[in-house]
Image 1 (cartoon, rainbow, N blue to C red):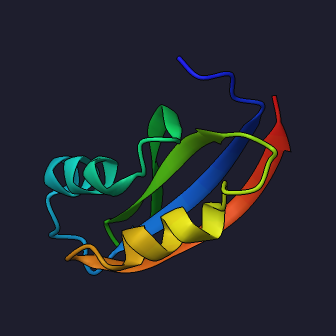
Image 2: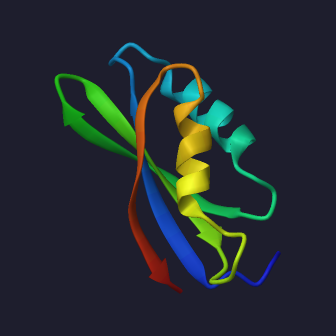
Length: 91
């Protein structure tokens, strides 16, 4: 495992409550660039049956690691309404 020193939380909103979250989670994991790691994925109930996926993505504090890049890749996945970087913290 790479020597990561940052964790970024990216919140992904599906297009509607009927989206299969297990399938969406797997599709999103597949687009994370290899240089990043994944600590965990949490599900956060929002309202009216809508559940957001929160990806805890590991990276390094150096050039070439952009959490906005990961969020942009997430936005291109089918059934993703939005993907936003919530926080980036040192670990």
